[in-house]
Amino acid sequence: MDKFSAMKAFVDVAEAESFAQAARKTGRSRSQINKLVINLEDHLGVSLLNRTTRSTTLTPTGVAYLERVKGILNDLEETEALLQTNQHSPAGELKINAPMSFGTMHLSPAVIEFMQKYPKISVQVFLSDQLIDPVSNGFDMTVRIASPTDSLALVEHTIVESKRIICASPKFLEQYQEPVTVEQLRDLPCLHYGNLPSGNNWKLHGTDGDKMLKVNGVMCSNNAEILRDAAVAGMGLALLPVFIAGKDLQSGKLVNVLREYTAPPIHLSLLYPPNRHLSARVRLFVKFIQEKFGGSAYWDSLGQEKENHAD
Image (cartoon, rainbow, N blue to C red; front, side, top):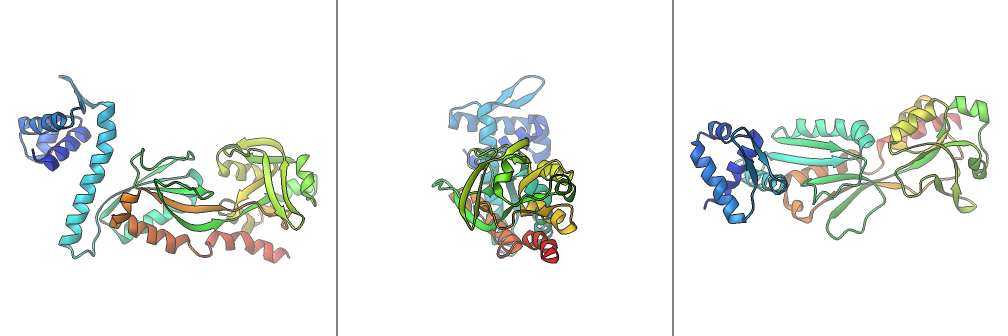
């Protein structure tokens, strides 16, 4: 059995949801396509497709197998393309997972720039605030904003630290006055990130050491942009990453308060399965993101410019 031809035939049928359409697409006969897929199923000892007279759909096993097979075929195509073009024109598909806010605010323009630089690489971007495992979910890479992990199953490439600050709108500070001690956070309305294990417990570090405070949470969300918008509207104090609040700090819509206290930083990291390390597409994207966001992240300067003027 020509395993690669059978895998390609399976992908064509799965994407077209039809043996006839897959045959027309590839210039083969329907019986040839059917024989290739049957041989593949016999070789694997599983059923990949549900066949009826009206439709062709994937079995649960077929869904999982499809993502892996597409990755293998993409790697094969990329290898051939690199050999044919003297390794100057990488091609293929890159499947990326990223958190929602960072994805829409910062990753989106970066991906567009990456695709313009490497037009033969197609990119899929799936945004979710859940901690998704790239291995079990078929991603080439996950962009993560969190504390570093100790996973032995993944390669973790830390790009940059991201500061978190306490901020509020001028409207809020006029109504409640600016807090001068962290203990006041127990009574003032606070907006907290509901998807973190700490919830409304804020860990802060200042000249007087570490403090863990249970703040007066009046609103929680698993999306920091919602908390930022609520803070801008004067609903409370928020502990936000500067990459979320930077532009509003710069414009004066938000003000950094209790500046002598900082929260533990979170990290922008790229996580990918060890076998993806050899992929030219992954290596290029890691290098591109490192150059784009590494060192002193541009959002930190956004967050500090207004503060410096106010000092």
